[in-house]
Image (cartoon, rainbow, N blue to C red; front, side, top):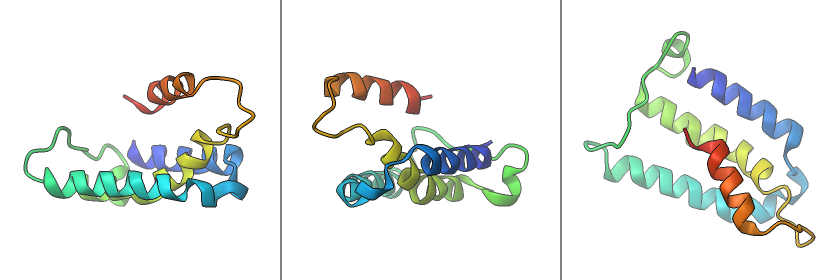
Length: 108
């Protein structure tokens, strides 16, 4: 299941991401990656959730660490250009609306 998520977000990022402005998103990427890796290190024995491989994931993402690294190093770089593609100054919607939409899409 996680392998299909990785593939889905790669396709989504390639189709809908604003890759020309990626340098503007780089600090956000570093923040997300640092936060996720810090969570993995500090709460190694007391995790809030654990990823379990399902189906074909046993071949590609066999344990929690590999799934988490896949999310951190593959999904996040492809999601950020999609999430912030409309973050230009000409955006007429308030940032709160975009935050709620992003939270709705990326939360389980």
